Image 1 (cartoon, helix red, strand yellow):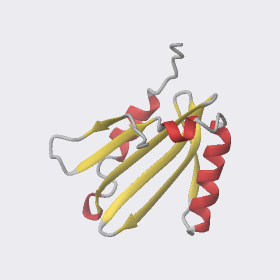
Image 2 (cartoon, one colour; image 1 turned 90 degrees about the vertical axis):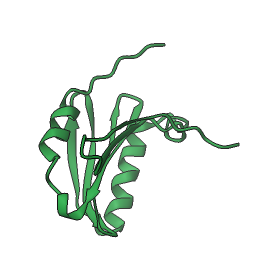
Image 3 (cartoon, helix red, strand yellow; image 1 turned 60 degrees about the vertical axis):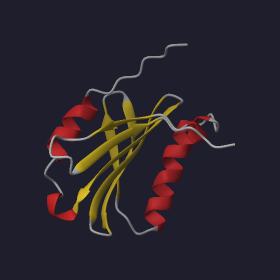
Amino acid sequence: MDEHIEYLAIVPQSEDALLRLSTDNRYKRSNDAANWVESFAVIQRKKNRTVVPAQHGEFRGHLVEFEADGEWLRGWALSAGEFPLCVHYRCQTENAGRDDSIVDEMLKTLCFADHQ
C-alpha cells in the first residue's frame, strides 16, 4: 500500500526555490515525535552534517544545512508535543541564503492547534 504524504509547498514568484512542510504519516505511527526528532539528528551527524537546535513558534527540534548536487538544502525535524513536522527548503547553490530570513520569519509563526 502506498503512503500518502500530505504537505504544503510554498514556491516564490521566481519559481527557483521550494519550501515544503509535511506531517508525514510514517512518523506519526511511531507515536513518539521527540524520538523521531532525535533520530533525525543522529542520522545527520553520521553524515558529518552540523546539526543545530531549532525552535520555531511552538515547534522544537533540529536544523541541518548543506549543499548536494548543485542545490542548497535546509532541513528541519520539529515537533510540538507528539506532532512531528518535517520542513525542507531547497534552491540552487548560487541562491543559498537568499530566502533564509523570509523562511525563518514564516517558521516563527508556527503554532500547533489540536483539532480532534
